[in-house]
Length: 253
Image 1: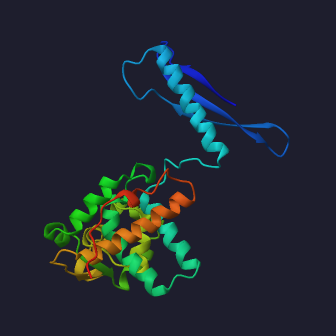
Image 2: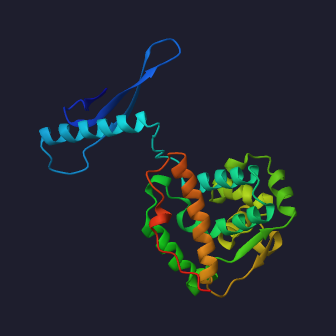
Image 3: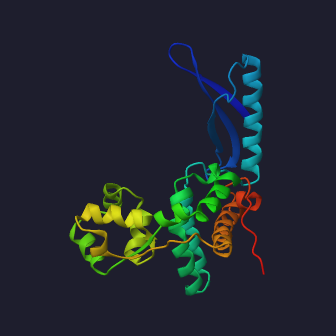
């Protein structure tokens, strides 16, 4: 059964509500409880309206738990995308397709990699597709591939990958992609080169792209995003697949 508990600051001001849900028994036979915090999302609500809304949120929370469904509000797109690509590689997707997917990820991460899975909306994807079709954005998204010397330079630092990535100014998944030899954006290559004290050309092979992506290629990016978000939907991490409601370019025959 779901119930709510108000929590207040020392001055008597409402801090938030805790929503409690019973979730069966643990291995010792004791009742398990799940909880989450909730705050009013509309200003000017009366106390009665707040309590009614909090109870409704608690009931919804209970329904999610009963269905085995609990939204992950922390995981970001770039983290989950790496997981899905690895999952597809382990379950038999061809190496060529995996390589193609990894080559597309840097452009996608530049736009939506930092966004939490639950915060991604169709308009984020539509903006991404629009930007991929623009010359200016395309020019900034030149592709760079690390030379073999990069691994030696990073290893010589004798620091954790997480720390190196943080100091360079990008995620550790981006650093892993660089060290694997995956194509990354010029901006990320530039960040690592600057951190290591070298020019980009000394550490990376750069491929300039001066034309916007074709509709066909943008559609490939959309299909990759859709596959990743479909897996999140399947694993009950998001309420729906926003890619299914986005508007990618049409592929003409």
